[in-house]
Image (cartoon, rainbow, N blue to C red; front, side):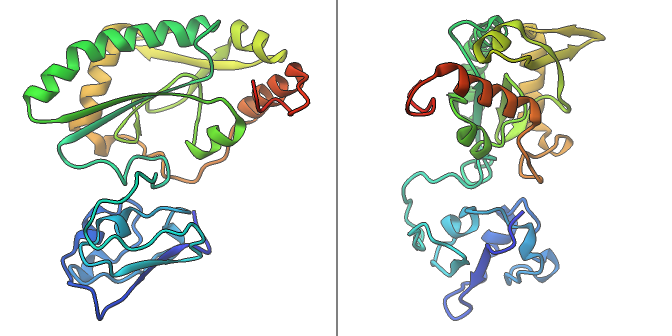
Length: 254
């Protein structure tokens, strides 16, 4: 959560449309004052989140601590800038953003297997969701570095998010020989629990059910906007990978 980052409202410009309040998932604004935007919980704002500012139709919102060069958009769509990698800045009521976050697709059986199953599921779900009027975006993002993992608030490999929500309600892991070999250290990776069984590669039925639940019943999930710190397990992976690479660049080129 931010301590030196929060929105400031220019009330002379503000149209009191209530858009910022309705679309902030962090609880920064006092909903009881709607449609007038009153910032009552500034520390709940996420560092470098421009979600409400990007949506403001009159450009009445700026941010304390903003050093990014961002400017109020006055209702015009600007460059794609992540809110806090939680998806709240990019997702409308009729848009589905599915993200596959992983450590390796070259040697890790777990990541490769989950990737293949997810591709099969998305091949079926995308046209169905489009038929229902949803725009669907499907992204795969390799957690190449520790910095990138922190930016995406990465919890465990592999992770599947729908509109910023992890389709799994908790993180379960066991030892992953492939990723341990990549980093030269003992690393745990994600396992998936479904119908009383544990899978290193999730079954298609589980992914289809979980993705549809995330699309239509988001409120039952945990949002990745909550307080975050990279796990010791992932820190060990990235440190081991960097040391094993032996590059003069410190591993950033690998």
